[in-house]
Length: 423
Image (tube, rainbow, N blue to C red; front, side, top):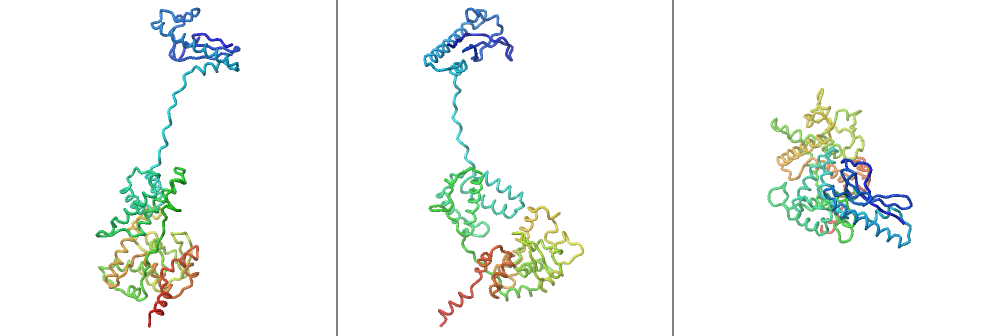
């Protein structure tokens, strides 16, 4: 049977006092229960009487406390003995020690949508994706106008997104005068940004699939509607080529030139046109790697292109670029600053092309990207084989090329209408 008695420790604690507590022994193996009480001197303890001497200012309180604790331990020993189970002195002490208060853990913090979005934007900026950073920042700003910045992912339910869609469709396009509502494609692009953040949160393990509001039955399905793609006709492109500009309109002349370069190089994107280098022209051909997908290729140099290039030849052009639009940049290594400047120049060229179209009395949009549409439209009219166009566009899939060209395929439909109603 275990035994218990009150003792004082023979060594001082860190405060210079002697701890006082209870020693429990079972089969010669001890265990101790100390609960923070101590004596300034061992002389204050009466070992035979198992009590604190009267010289201690709180001798009665300490003696009563220790006697009560000793009685609890003896009761616990008797309980163990009555149960006829094997036990140790440590078991007795642990049974008497006060149990720590169990504090309920705080519920996990729900991830804020904005935290994930901010990380995403920072990542895009570090990658140099200026266009993505700019356009998605604008979309997220509109989202926070509706939802607030403290919204969490579980709050973005199907019903919430339906209400947000109505908010977008009845909202004003801030880039246009008057109350012009957002287009369906613009609304879709706003939803895509939210889905992107949701997918990133899922991948990071911040949320599960149960609250995912996109796709499937009774959820938000994102559909990409076809946008109207109209290029310039052969006649309109001829007018553009032949247009003459005064010395005061040199800015229009240069914008027209780069637009024609984009058109005649198989609908080259404006970013690639602005980054054209003289070293890209070798052995009578033009070699470049498409910035969008990294696909290399080469094209013949039409005489009209050669004539335009002659205007820009210099001994040491800035960064060896054909066009001077990026010459103010210190270097071309900072992708973010390059994209920022390209974005600004693209807007300027777009304004210039709008002015040119007004002068030519052509009621069409001739933004830099419309050069690509114009090439595709002419290719469709000339019935160029899709495999040839796939190589020119540098599409990985022929289906991509055929889908793109279908936007400009109207001949058969026109012939069908004529056959049916033309009598």
